[in-house]
Structure formats: C-alpha cells, structure tokens
Amino acid sequence: MVGGAWVYDSITGWATLDEIDNLLERMWSVNFHVPGAVRMEIGMAAAEIAANIVEHAGADRPVRMRMEARVGLNDVRIDFTDDGSPSTIELERVRLPHEMAETGRGLAIAQAVLQTLSYRRHGLNRWTLVSKPF
Image 1 (spheres, one colour):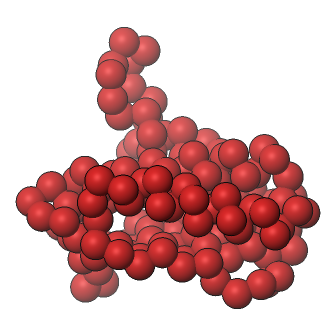
Image 2 (cartoon, helix red, strand yellow; image 1 turned 90 degrees about the horizontal axis):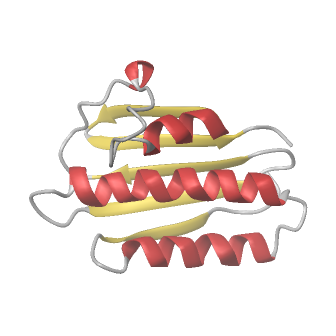
C-alpha cells in the first residue's frame, strides 16, 4: 500500500455522491502514478455502488455508509459498508440489459472495468472493488 486509507463515513443524503467524488479527486491529486484510465474506471464503479447503496439499501431510510479507498503500488481498492437493507443481487448473474433499457447497466459495467467486484452480508452490506492492475 502506498498510503493510508481515504475514508468517507456519513449518513446518506442528497450530497453523498458529490462528497465521494470529491474525496476520490483529492486522493488522485496525491497519487500521480495511477493511470487516468484506472482513475476513471474505478471512479465510475465506485459511483455506481454508492448510488445503489443510496437508492436501494437506503430505500426506506438514510443509511450509514463508509467508504475506504486505498491506493497500492499497482492497484486501487475501495471497500463500502452500509447498514441498509440487504442486497438481493447475485453478481454472477449480472448482465447488460437490453439496449433500450433505461436502468440496470451500472453493475455490469463495474464488473467489466474491475479486477474484482464482490458483495457479502455479515451484519452490514460489504462491497469490495479492486481495479485492474496497472
């Protein structure tokens, strides 16, 4: 690991996605060795997972969300936890929807651009994202 964790920890709300994006921008500003394509890909995947947490895990109420991002020598890892409703998604069954579908592309795209995308429930929802090596 190159540096310590970059942490976002808050109750979800209207500003959550912007706050996460701002944190990632600060992280990139001091981690010049991460290629632009990797920054874009893991940033897009992180935005998708965060949006899903806000929309689905927090459908009934705002939830506590924590994001820890770590930049390594040759990859980036982001872990999300939240205390919202469990996800019913089966990642191994995720596919791109029909081209005319208005939603449902995010997880499939995240899987395509990441080395690892995993979900598990152990008291909290836990999502792990790992970039492709660079």
